[in-house]
Image (cartoon, rainbow, N blue to C red; front, side, top):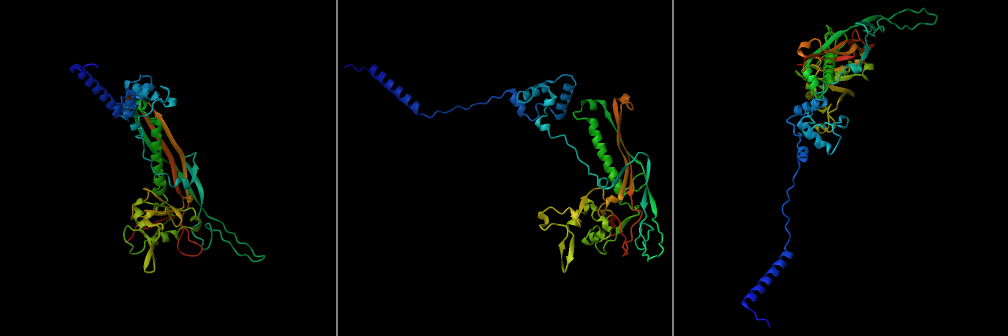
Length: 399
């Protein structure tokens, strides 16, 4: 038997300790060290909402310079290389070669003006000359005749017939002019990311159409159209307010009385136009029933549903072109099929010569037009005394 010396005992002890440690390591749960994800420059650039550009203008400038062969900037080259690794062929604009960075993508916007109210509903005649005339019926009363003189007789057998004939008036449309002028630097035309000429055409056309539509409603007839709601319209009816209804108010009885003055065959074409200031008055309108009242404009669900966009079953259009609350014309009932318009389309032109020495281009916009109601007077019906018309407003005297 081997003699156990002190050295041998120490060796056995050390071996046993090593084996014990190995067994512990085998059963010990493995702890995964933290992993650091390293992103390359491309990934960092794509995650940056600005694509590495200082501003949208910075991006647009670099795109324009690249597209006009002035060289690709370092910023645009890096951004283009990053997006082309994943998406599209480099430099091919038909494939979206210059994608707008996400942070700038929603910043090109514009404010839309109101749509035209009168023109889509009126009789429009293109004009080749400066002036055009139309025959108009003179039809002021049906009490004894029609169309200003036609009388229908009841003739006995073998009785002699009696002649009658209509009377005609005349409507003359003479072109008036609306114009717009804008100077744009050649640098802006060259460097802008949007097509400046088409953008100016869109904006000026909208603005001119807005002014034209306002004239069709409110124009005085002096160097402009005669508006359907202008006091100079011979067929305009102004409905009296109810005594004691209060200043700057609109009540259900006003709507009732205005509807009663629309000539019957025009009711199916008529629309209401009103200033948005009238909304609180319409919102609160109620019709008296016994000792109480019921709302006449809100839906059955009250404020939980959208308010009706009709009155008396006809469309209601809110527009800033109507007069302010409390002024005649703040709300109106109109059949614009009884309004005639003559015009030439909007003409656009540009010139580099006017301010050639300033490196500026001039853009000019011109619309020639006219318009007026076709009724030369209000109409007294066959029976009854209250006159009728296609154009009705509420009196401004409300006390």
